[in-house]
Length: 134
Image 1 (spheres, rainbow, N blue to C red):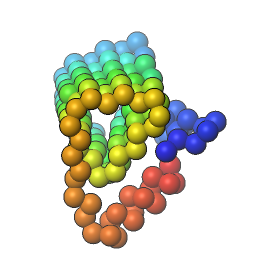
Image 2 (image 1 turned 90 degrees about the vertical axis):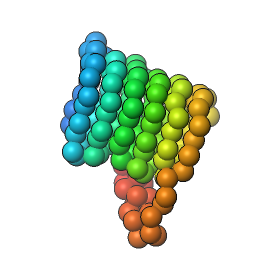
Image 3 (image 1 turned 45 degrees about the vertical axis):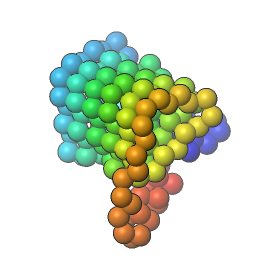
Image 4 (image 1 turned 30 degrees about the horizontal axis):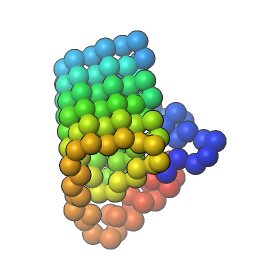
């Protein structure tokens, strides 16, 4: 969850950025690292690390990532192998699969949500520790 006065969607380390004035159509694959979208993306994303959709970001298509934080708009299909977090400005029209779901007051979500298997407790603990450290 985002703490007051600190926007973790804006403070995380980012390896790949689709900027505010940038539009991209196609497939994006990243084996690791964090990807942030502040512009427009249409297509399919397969990310080994985390995905952050900023307040000005729009993603249309299929998204698969470790942890996904949405402050902008996503339409399509979402799969978070860890946590899916929707901030108060999020607008999601998608079917979503995730291990953990965090929806903050004000976020909009329309579609089906389905839990992914949590795996063993040791792996689950790693996900929780990583989300707290970020």
